[in-house]
Length: 368
Image (cartoon, rainbow, N blue to C red; front, top):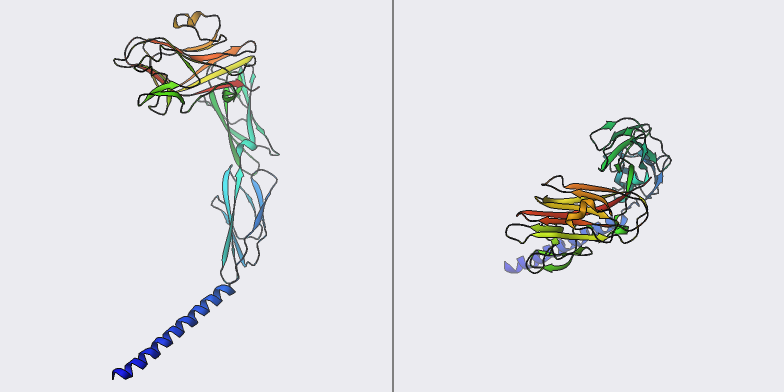
């Protein structure tokens, strides 16, 4: 009985192996014979920055599916598409062959608002005329303005009124004849539009100020700014920089720490500034002032002592801090002739629990 079973078992195994081998051959042959398509296309700009034609160059396909990245799709061969807002869009083409094989190609379409529209802001009759100026061949039929001061307008080129020595961000959403919308912003003042010139004139401006040296686990001295010994009043000459809350420029007399008397942190511009109107903007993490703290801009090489700040003839701009007011502060100043200026802080903290932590500074000039 056992001798009869063994030949039968061997025969079944041989058949099973042959069947498996034949199935593999069929699968391999099917894979080799599949007609894979080639998905390919080029993006052709249309008659405005929002319109594109997608020129199909695919091969070996039966059908196409286009997804334009804005929740719309097409099954046309070479479709055209109008985007309704600026932004970046991932356009995906899926090509399908007769036997169901697929291939895909993705291209990012970047409709950059900075290349389509700029806001100009020019003084006019004590106000500021705002315009949405196209940078390419496009027209705008409508505009919605937010002046940044609580006021709005639907005029194409409105007049806005701004408080002096404050900065505002004007925003416009402009609409093309096809209904596409582009959004742009502009920093403005009562004297017109502004441009950022910080990095050509100042070093180590944040966010995240750099320390020239570390003292202890948390504090240090801020790099590229001149810090006098009155600021470095804590143990180990630490002061002027604080790792706490994001690497800030700081002065601090907190709890039982020594007083700060005539403490100064300052920097002179790398190059002379041209004559004109400027704004120095400061972004604080926090400040608490009970005694005296000034931001000072002077044409001298050193900011004045605390007792002379408000009467020094070289001072062309200052802000006096009290309490714990708005964390975004601006000092405006006008330079009558070209020259370098020195910018910084001077303080006297005699009472306990006083400090400031500065996270960023910027220097702006009128661009008109």
